[in-house]
Each structure stands twice: as C-alpha cells, then as structure tokens.
Image: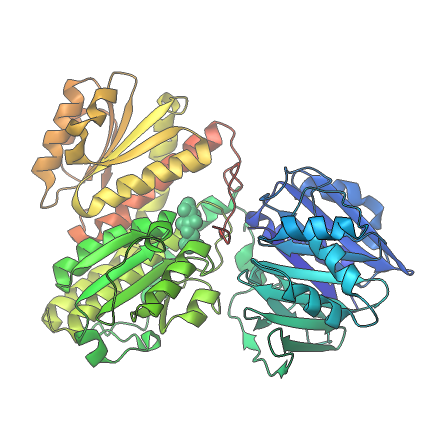
Length: 613
Ligand code: F6R
C-alpha cells in the first residue's frame, strides 16, 4: 500500500519521480505528490486522484534543474484521499518533507504533544507527525534527528525524508513496510517501495531490513541500524527483471498482458526443477533436509485473497499425493487464533508480493511456536523470503495489474511441484508416477498457450448477455471448488458485480434460494472423478431456471443439452484442471469489467501488496 520513490543523482529528478510513481501506482492511487530541492527551497506538487492528474499539474516543472527529490502515491489509511492529506508532508518551517507508507500507531499522542509545543498541523494524516517530530529533534544532523524521532514511533513505516538544509541528501528508513534502495553505475541512488520503480535505471538493489536507516547521496550511500546506530555492510543483489517486463507491451491493460503471460509463467516456474527422465524434483532453495520433511506430521498453508485460493487447491493435491494432513488458513485469522502449531508442523506462506502484513505476521507467529517456515513467493528479496527458512520462488515476473492472475497460476505450478517434492522425500509415490505428473505440469503451459486466444474470443461474444447482471455465482467441486472462489473474487474486484463462489454440493444448503432466471451461474464441470456429482448439481440449477455457463471437457456433448453457453476445454490430467479452468474465469471477469467500463488495472478501493493489517 502506498508507493514511495526517491532519487539523488545527476538526472533531472522530476521525470524520475513521475516514472517511478507510474510504476508503483498499483500500490495505491487515491492521491499523489512529489517534492524536489532547487535553489535553497522545496517545490511540492500534490493532488487528489490518480497520477495522471499530478502529471498535468506538474506541467513545465518537468524540466526543473533539480536532482534530489521524493514522490508518493497513496492508498489512504488515516485521513480521506484529499490534496491536504496527500504526501509529501511538511514541517512548520516548510524546509523539511516526509513521504511515508505504513501506520504510525501512536500518532495521536505524538500529535497532541507536538501541538502543545506549538507545531501547526495541516492534514489529518498520521504521517504529518513525523515531519514535526523530526523538526523538533533537528539540531545539525538530519540522520541523528530522524533516528531520534523514530525511537519515539510505534507502528510501521517506509519513510523518505529530505530537507533543504541538507542539500543532495535523502534519508530512507524502514520498519515493517517494504523499502529497497537502488544504486546506478554513475552513482545515482534511489529508494522505492518496490523494484519496478528502479528497473529503468538499475538492477542493483539493496533490501533494507526492519529498523534500518539509509543516507543516500549522489555517489554514496550509508546504512545504519536504528537499534545500535552501527554502520551496516549491505549486500547488493542483482535483479533479473527488466524494465520492459513492467510495461504493457501493446496490451490494453496489464491484466490482459499478464493473463497472456501465464504459459511463460508456468514454464519459468517449473523449468529446471524436475528431471523429466527420472521424475526427480529438485528444490534446493527450500532449505530443509529430507529428514526434516520426514518429521513433519502436518502442514499449514497460510495466505490471503487469491493466494489463499492457491492454498486451497494445494490441500487437495498434497493430501492426495503426499499423504500429509493440510490445514489452510486465511492469514488474518491464523495470526490471532489459538494455534496448535509446534516443531512437527511445516508452515507454508503463499504470497505474490512477500510483503502482505497478515501473512508476514502469520509466519512470525508460526516460527515462534517452533514451526519451520517456507514461503512460496514471486518477489526476490521480499520480507517473507528473508524471514522464512526457505523459499520456493515463482517466476511469474512483475505483476502490475492489481487483480492477481499470472502470480496465481505460477503459485499453482509451484505448489504442484512442491507436492511432487513432498511425495519424493516421503516416498508416497513411485518415480514413474511422479515423472508422468511432472510431464503433465510441463505440458499444461502449452495447452494454456494454445487455448488462450480461442477462449478469449468465445467469452467476449458470450458476455453480451451477462455483463450487466447484478449478481453472479461460481460453482465447482473438489480441486476445482477453489477455482469457483477465485472466479468470484476476480469478478467482484474488477467489475463490482456481486459474486459468490460455492462448492457445487453446497448450493442446496442455502444459496440455491438465490437462483432464478436472472442469476448467471458459471459452473466448472470437467469430466473428472466427481463429474456425475457436479452434473447433478448443475441439473438442480437448471431446474430452477438459472442462466448456466458451463465449462467442460471437449466432446462432452451432454453439456450442450443443458445450456447453449458452453466453453469446451481440452482433456488434461484432472489435477491440471485448476490451472486450465482458471483461464476462462479470469477472462470472463476481464471482459465483463472492460465492457462495463471499469478500470481493471486499478479497481476502486484496492491496492496491490497489502502492507497494513
Ligand atoms: C486478488 C489479489 C489479492 C491478493 C492478496 C494477497 O486478485 O490480488 O487477493 O492475492 O492481497 O497478496 P499476496 O499474494 O501478495 O500476499
């Protein structure tokens, strides 16, 4: 939530800040602002609304001869999304500015204290207290003033600070909100909430840890521990993403581009990890010995939103093939409920960003209780990957669309690989069976690639009769039940149509009362081991005149007798169906949302990477 960018170097700073914000806008888009130093003064632009408005307001200042500055794109927590509450926030003197992502939990008492000392507040945000607190503590050393101020702060922050009295300097600090530094060959230094903002300039990044502060200048950077004050020796990591990966590449929306990138995301996630001759799965980054895996008697899968749906699918796979009981938890529940977790439990956190606050808190709690922790994650160097015992990276590339698509598909691919790996270390499957299933996983990438254009075309014709409905149901059974949940989530988040996903067999326990001739129902009905059962549920819907869209297996002509809206999918191994059948669910949401004129990449009220509770 919220995107921060900062730069100190030789480039003109305004275009760098705006480009950085454009690449971070998925983190929040209800207001935006920039500030830069020029001629012993700070120039600040802020406005309510999206970045495009700010760009209009900045106008000619784009060519300002300034080389140090900060930018922010906001997802409001404290204070409405107005211009007054937009960052950067300034101290009383107007000589010091702050941009912030996170929540200052004790801001109320700090604000009262600072007001008593005469500070004048101009916004309703928690962030503004930071500007005044630093002003209060500033004598002649900006680093010392920020450090002293942060000692008083409770809560989470990724912070950028700048003062005209310290020309060319930027301060970055982090606690429980992500912040990376970038170092350019010519000595330019950057800070950003996420890697995509840095990609046009550098691939060399430094991940700040909690309670660390960095002083950035052109040609140098210095990182210190906020706890001890000691200077730290940080490692530079080279990122293998490039700037083009975070562009639309001719697609109308990031979401559509990312849907079409899914075959590649599967291939990248699987390749090199399974030997297709022997069936051996190799996952060295997981960092647990075979013995440790053998000693596990339960797995908790912990995640939020779409990643939680991937976890639900994995439960079916792991219990079936690796024969270990699996519990799936929504991270915001897991972190607070009474947990029966100990050293015989393996906790697997699934997260695209690796920064989701609830999932992070969940793994911290599990570790405290003695559990080993693995994360399945897309973002290299993210907090979860650094806190977990081991990581299984998905290689989806940067996902910019707020609605997760290729990250989900690559999570499924990684989780299937993980299932095969568990079956190997626990000896629950022959290598021949593993080899065949591994081949099915590899092959599904090609199948998805071949089917994507046809499915899109069919769905875009079909939605003309559905796009203006008020509600939608999605149903599926077994391993496809989570796909019904995922389809419903995608539709509601980008088209604002109310949608629910149900296990097909659950309908008659209540939701069937909703069905009438107005209600569209998207039913996942492949010819799998529960086909007959699902079809019985579909017949129950038909008997109540529900408007069915069926998603079934090529050649299943019976489906045409039930409804004229059938999308046929090629026959694949039934455990690959969740990957394949997700594609039409995503495209249905995408086509309906664009038909309704919704902003699919930046849906209202949402932000990617939910770093607050
Ligand atoms: C929905 C979506 C969210 C995320 C959730 C978890 O399309 O993207 O539900 O899946 O916020 O995010 P990560 O995976 O980054 O932990």
